[in-house]
Length: 290
Image (cartoon, rainbow, N blue to C red; front, side, top):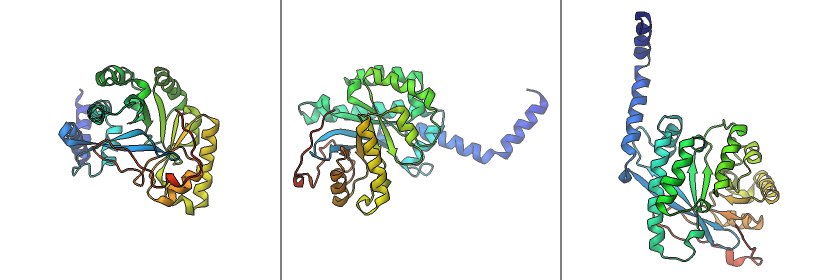
């Protein structure tokens, strides 16, 4: 390195020493958090709103809270932009599926292989060719699971999916038997354009649209549009964040297929079936098929 370049480099280091040191600290913190005892795995049931049957679990992995990562969202936001994204995704999902399979065996129920598992995946990870091999050989075969049991839930934390490049990647996974869920539908990040391009098997309506939906006409109109789109594209709709009986009743009247939220089942570290507090009051029980 020439003397002039070295001088500029040292000036850059000096001018940015605080931010560089903070970045170093966060990178080290991530590595320290990648230990089973520092990550808790939660399962939230997803149930059919008309029948009250638990047909899936969303797996939620929550690293230990630290000063540098005071919330789970802060942790994943940082990881998604870092060079550790692939490493973290592989560790987290392996740990989650290990714990899931152990609990599933302990339940000793019939038709266990029909229960779906929703795994949160950031789009850039799916696009990594290495992950396409890891998810099958290192995760599914290891845990004796099959692709048709797995729903890849895309968590688009920032705008920026290149749809033309991403569609073939999604089709690759779909051909192997995986199904796709689009998280946070109705928000700015997951736009209608994303729905049109990716054609997910499941659309998860963001909890911000579900909150007090029975009182807000604008929310009702948007949710109805999503339901209409889903009915014409062979897609199932999942309402997220259902917290009250009033919200649940209204969504049942709209014939939303599935839901999750505190009113149906909180995230817990043990597998358990969700419950629908008001399904018995419905006169018409609609059939549900995958």
